[in-house]
Image (cartoon, rainbow, N blue to C red; front, side, top):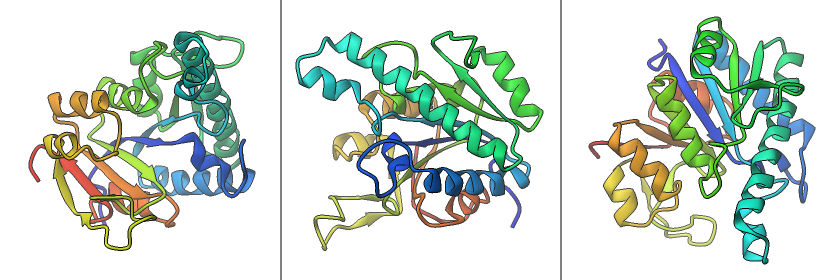
Length: 239
């Protein structure tokens, strides 16, 4: 099946890297994600990636426990760099050329984020992992993912989760949960569906950036999504 989306931003949570562990990075999960990405790159897709940091440190949790919010968010952004370096190692071990670009400059560890340089990397077939969020506190990696997708002129955001799309309520807790095949941005906001934070959805809506929500645990789902197959739930301007 031909590729429908040539440049894609893949967003997934740090918790996804834990696997069955209580915290940290599971190397088996890293290898699985790397293989899924390798399949997509083999199709000629240009891929950017944003990873959260919930497996190491989540800023909003630290703030809820009395820590200064700005300090906590800065720690969370640094944790995304750790996850990004781990995924880069797994990808390059599988033969996929990868660059980590951090919004917080740390040149001894990775490249600083420069939009035009990121675009050149993508054009040369390299995966670009965008680390350190937006470099600003109070913004989640969901919002960072939408922002980077817009900056690199991606045609689709893939939000990889542990369920096969968006439901009207948590399908893990409710057997009668109903899955949506398509939603508008406004429907996501008015129904308070926990796809990503409101700032990220609003930014996607204002710039007509489609978001595909799918289950990353199903092998081949990301490949099917970039080929335009009906997998997961699509959030777009029209439902």
